[in-house]
Length: 235
Length: 119
Image (cartoon, rainbow over all chains, first blue to last red):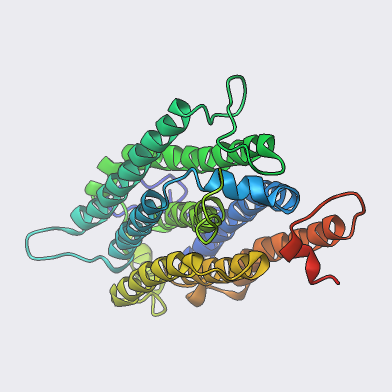
């Protein structure tokens, strides 16, 4: 009976292979952290490629970085931080059973998710315009790529920079798209109050995923956008 | 079952789960400030290696804030703390050995500021 997957509103199911709710919760969190650890390695590999080529073609990386709009990157960083906060709000509302006079607990959890979807969507829309700008300027690696500069040692190495730019921000964006698809899927359930003080392992685990995606961007922003700021514009 | 469930869940929605949203609001504010700081620092000409190290340090502080507060590691069990730390520690090792390799190879021209500290 307790092993059924708790479709009830209280949703406080304890799977048969766990002794206590705390054990169940710790197992769920540990599993999520193990998944995130392999995600760290996954993105770590790309950052390692960045470090390696940056050491070889620093000038080209700076020239590539100077083609990006730092203001847009910074604004998008703030947008993503806001989305992490709204995610925290959803998890917090579920954990504490937060409710207000007019709104029940499910409303607050769902509101956090809607906020996260909203900020996530803004981020991706902005990113789309950035990608489009690169397309217009022939800065997408591959056939038709035109180095944006010519007066440096290895102008063609800017293509490596843009490969990493698209690879890393693209993979990051893919993580966001997957996260947002999951959020859309779970939103009605959240609104019904499925996640509450008794049952919040899933939404907490999902929150960890979203924050991880935020952390990846925290490292992408300085190393893709900011590295060319203190250097006079290369041509 | 309903009885045992509500009983267990009382222990479960427990003491170590914070009841105020305030720490999260403060953390968001700090993250905003650090984003501004990293931008302002990038405008100062610190030189190739130092500029990167400072940017990295600020990013690490931001990541630690997210991990500790938003991801609740601050109030997690030791097992979670170790697991969370292990992935990041591995990346640190990975980068240390990568840099040690590339910076000491002949025939690869590396950024002056990055290699000069090797002597």
